[in-house]
Figure (cartoon, rainbow, N blue to C red):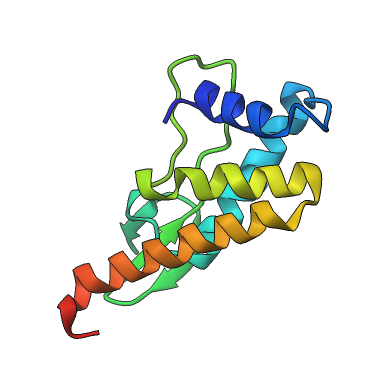
Length: 129
């Protein structure tokens, strides 16, 4: 998902009650949301072998690691959110939570994380779970 679309989604969800922050603060909110989601999942988009030169966020099984996501930069118009498609709305909802402090957005984000983790486990271990 393009960063511009992520920004629009956050603005749309929060515009009736909250003033949209400037781009600098919005980028910070999105990055914090990216880190929140990444810490609770192992997004395939960010999984590398441990020989990577990128900065490692956490180690996972099988000689793999999860790297830090790229910092969102709105000046790059064709830049995508560095996250698995299934987790894009989790990032958006968590950013809305950070902006509004409304727990419903955090709950929505956590639900998406739970669904992703269930799909990830099924892909790894099959339907036996």
